[in-house]
Length: 124
Image (cartoon, rainbow, N blue to C red):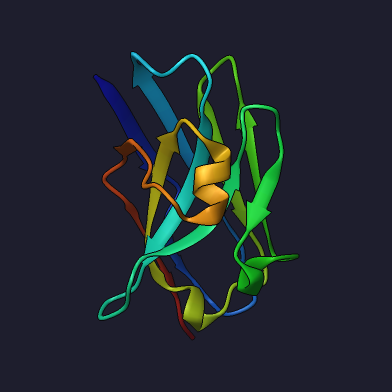
């Protein structure tokens, strides 16, 4: 069983920053990517950013240059530094892990494990 716990969400004004964290525990795969998704009320889930086991990253076009994903392998953790936040970034953000980074990038397969989510609200 794999457990993912997110933290770091909150409310911020437009142009502000937040840093999300996610820690995995349990029987994680031997090699896995880590990723962040988001879902706003009334909208579909979006793939925000992912980082492969080897450190390759992939971003949603609208967050490229504003968000940065990183991971700590020893702690099984992934982070999402979010700068220049805009109201359209408001959503529940979910941490996820899966096996094939190719499948993640191509949208071919859902991640195997998900966290409970952390809320991000951007408003003035």
